[in-house]
Image 1 (cartoon, one colour):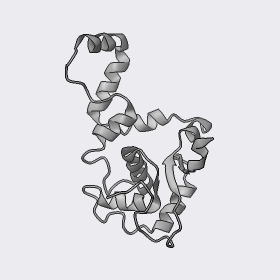
Image 2: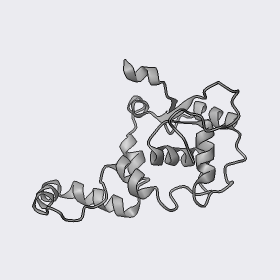
Image 3: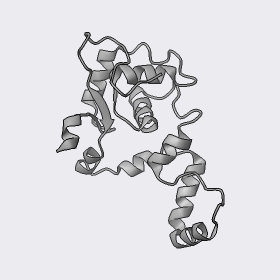
Length: 164
């Protein structure tokens, strides 16, 4: 199980030394002329992607129908991040065949929170269908890959920057 509250998921760090936590930085996408929404939407399941396409095609009709149908069953969220966390990340969202950084990207999307390298590796290894598939990657190597990333927008998370 991944624990995010205090960052203590075990691992190879020296006792008392917190590991860097990583997140997908939306500002990195802006600075690099990319759309995070496009990256996220391309990882949505077909059902949620159809819902998103339908909502974009007829936004007024969709809003009217929602207001008229009190108590009706709701479709899965069309907010890409919420859809991935609640629907799309089930099943084969992460597989052993994915490149490591793609698997990390999907894990961070599914998790919705910053994670350290130990939590990431453990999360990948404990993902259904991936048992042991990523255990050959050391925590140090994973940190190196995350620090060197220039495609997915992985950045170290600095909690002190949130309060500024």
